[in-house]
Image 1 (cartoon, rainbow, N blue to C red):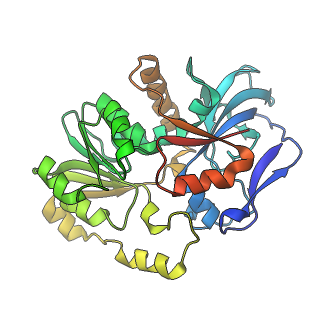
Image 2: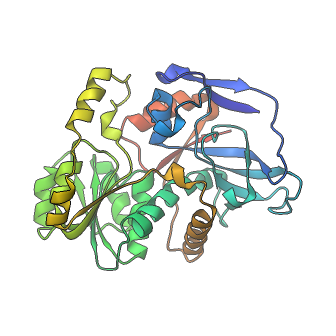
Length: 340
């Protein structure tokens, strides 16, 4: 098999493509020949060495989602069928031509979706599903502010929020991302490159938001919290703004970002009737019942045409460095995948 290996954290050049013997599934496992693997910003943080859940795991292979065909089954496994087209989730290891997983971690590819489109789906869709229906517990009619709305999780949030009957205001960083957000259900879009974010948010939603979804951190968390309505929830699931775009991490800069991070006082939260919720979806990948229920709902919405494909940029596996650089640029739309 071929896989991307990180021997120790660092800059882009630590991403090495290696060739090894193919793995074999143990009892109760399946072996998937991977055709495409999703690329997420969390993978970049894994590469840098600042992803807490990856500490102590190096040398390791990044990647949380994949799609391909079932090549072998271990003892006691009768489904999925050999040769079936599937996609799945994994707690690291996705950047590989072969992934061993438990059967419940893989699902049949939706009709009409190719491997790249499938690989781009499960991690971000699961993140959005958990953020909306478990963390924020949204209700129909609520108003949402969605940062990084044209990215992987953002596009999933917009679609699922529309299914839930919520009204989403999308935030993007450049004009070429506006159209996609509107097509996916945003009632309006703020382009941070042309207007002042918070002044425009106040103008469009003066009563405040029921939920703010923020994966950037640092610059936006405090101001987003201030825009919450009574009973509002700030949901954070990433800190992309702590890390420089396309260059090595500066430890002094990282320390400064940490010091600038807002701290929320429980007394003030109670007095203001607001909540702050954080989660990391990788810790939920082992929760079989939760993942199975969420994916059953998501696949049902795909069949009902309520979830549509979002743009996917394809990179060959040996261009993994270029894929990371592109994602870190902040100019991409939708998802990036590595093709095996």
